[in-house]
Amino acid sequence: MAATPEPVGEPLAPGVSLILPDKPVFASGLAVNQLVQARFQDRHQVFQSFIEAGTNRFSIVMSVPSGPRIMKINWSNGSVSAQKEPIAPEALSARRMLADLMLVYAPVEVLRAALEGGTLEVDAKGTRKIMRDRTPVIVVTRPSGDAWSGRSVLINNAFDYELNIQSQRVNP
Image 1 (tube, rainbow, N blue to C red):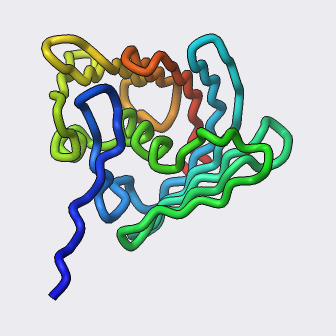
Image 2: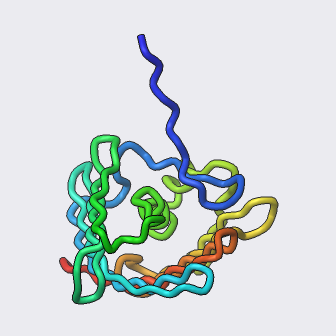
């Protein structure tokens, strides 16, 4: 009988990773448009994404604003698949995108269970901090109330990038 391979964590920072659960952790019936301003070191990019979640499935379609598609990501049945278009940066990773979305939007208890090598702190305003050796390696601010409606910011101090995400639900 073959052994089941151990899940591989997505690196969030040196010594800190996130294990993507087999099934998506976001509520079924979710439909959201996002405008994302991304900064990696001194490079800046803007992209749009459309997110849909159903029973045990989650998909993201990323595109240049009012332009061509960059990548489509599907997460279901214990697997993640991606279709990257020729304009997609080579380093763009579907698993990284899903890990970042979990950091911002996953329920706290799910996020705590998925973290390895770091701890999650949440303050009274809902700010999330991934800590390693008492140092915040990632800081996430989210809107109060519905996190999928409004502005969220993820700052990864360890890998020097920031995502400024403006989200709007398509369905009420």
